[in-house]
Image 1 (cartoon, rainbow, N blue to C red):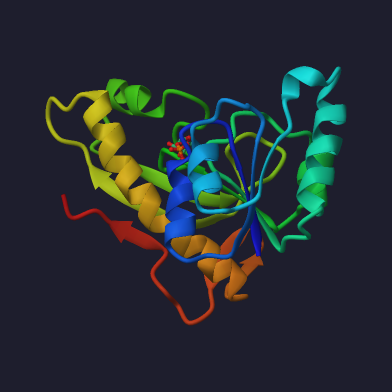
Image 2: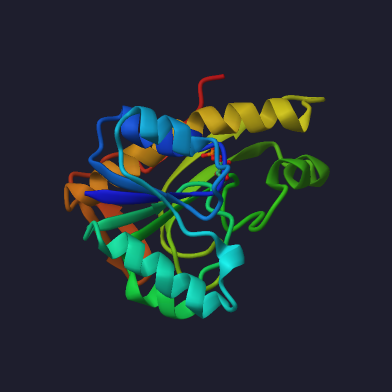
Length: 203
Ligand code: GRF
């Protein structure tokens, strides 16, 4: 079982659900996250833990952890969850917390990745599923998908092509985790059975 944390649209959460993964609950830090509607329509338990109601990051993360632990998940998946988590929270979910990031990490951690990739003139861009460590958008890489940047491409078009790949690799990574197929050694992730940890987008 996994619990998915969202803040907005929730298309990656939707991809996890539609892949048939056992999503026990969807938790958002914003009551207006569009993804909550999808989860409710699928009868998946939802909860809102609004960060604005807490005086400190520690207090918010404690409340979040309590909500997560009601479901006793093996895995917690961040899917567009726009809050930086405290090192204590991250540590308590060590090697059980995944994130999806819209760049080929370690390039372009943080926000506005597509605009920054275009501004840097990179020819390859993509997305990464990684285990979460206290440092933002870092941690052992589970799988990456690569898209070729088209000459003159706008960031919106590039973002859409990357997002399609996000929806491919996140369910794959979460499935591997739940099937006990991920091995982390010296910060490097291997998949038992040697499934490909690299997807090359066809378009
Ligand atoms: C995705 O691009 C994801 O990589 C990033 O935030 C976005 C969330 O989109 N972390 P969605 O809410 O999953 O549609």
